[in-house]
Amino acid sequence: NNLKETFGFTYIFISHDLAVVKYMSDQLLVMNKGEIEELDDADVIYNNPQTNYTKKLIHAIPKGL
Image (cartoon, rainbow, N blue to C red):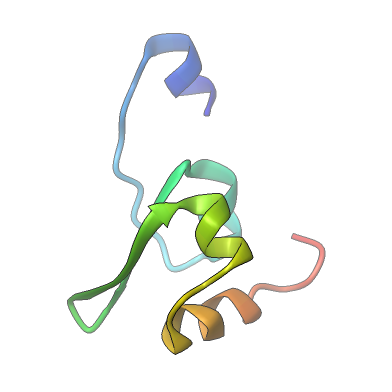
């Protein structure tokens, strides 16, 4: 987020590590087998995932991260 705030950067960050994604992202796009599952603000998706796939991903994040 410092890059965004300091330089006004917009970037695409691709990862399977959702703990890192949670830290790095304002917007989140969840894909499954090349199809978009969800696209929304990261806080919205983390606090209220809409699809079973996203729910499983969110619940797989180790607690405390």
